[in-house]
Image 1: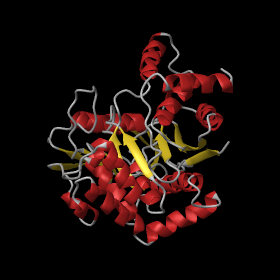
Image 2 (image 1 turned 135 degrees about the vertical axis):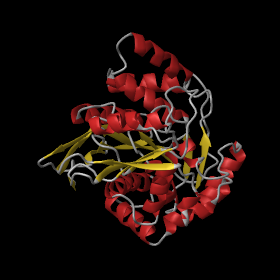
Image 3 (image 1 turned 45 degrees about the vertical axis):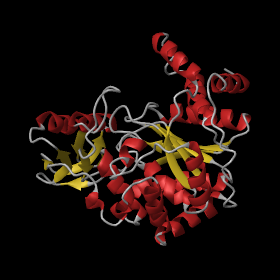
Length: 384
């Protein structure tokens, strides 16, 4: 498809159902979308971090299907937290505090759902123009003024190669800018899980640690890359470099953590988790997965590790599946790290003692070799 055809298809899908009017919210509303991944905790960090600089974060999120829950499932790990707030309250909270999260409305882009079912039976699921217009139609229907995209590449991503990821990123950025929404993208590595935690309450804990200034290096790097695009597009910085400097300052000064507490309290949650993450749900058992040999971690198949977390109950195999918010995995090693036989590769957080199938899946997913280097996290930036 030409760029014009992609844009026209996108708007046809937007107009097939409801659209969300966020005009009552002051400022440039910047939405962020990730094409998925394992241990993708970015929204939990980004929303309060960006809001702490005065950028309105009016987030509509869904429940997850796959490795772990979605953003709403993760936030519901916090006692009392809820997203069933009316539109007027949603607008009030964003205008006053710059941040709120609600569930997605039921009738956004119904044509997209029908087209997706058709793509499934016509071998066009992987068509880049159709993927791009599908994603962008939902973001535009949800009322965003500007859009930041995190396009994943690697074993744990839908786009397996960097070239495919760049083609998708350029297609989506082209659609957004053609339709008057300032749009940028980051292409990021998903050959191994992001951060260390995979699981709902475990990822909330990791997000809190990141807001406290002691998060995993890769998660912090990605949040700064995406956040600087959001702050720049919202007009709160004159360049991406200035935006990143402001974000680092907000993290170091504790402003982002304070914004997280306010956000949680506003939606009925217990803000004390920000100072005491042990208040989050915890699994009954912690089981170590020891390395069988000395060497260096050479590969961690992100999708298979995500599936191991789902076997514990951290995610949904079907929409009807029940999630166990406490369970999941915490990686103790990443690609490029040296390891000795007997040292723990992963800690399994489980509510049952028998986890042999999970251990087997993890051993099959992690390769140890004589030497290896950590992959670069940011593979590219697309700004036009």
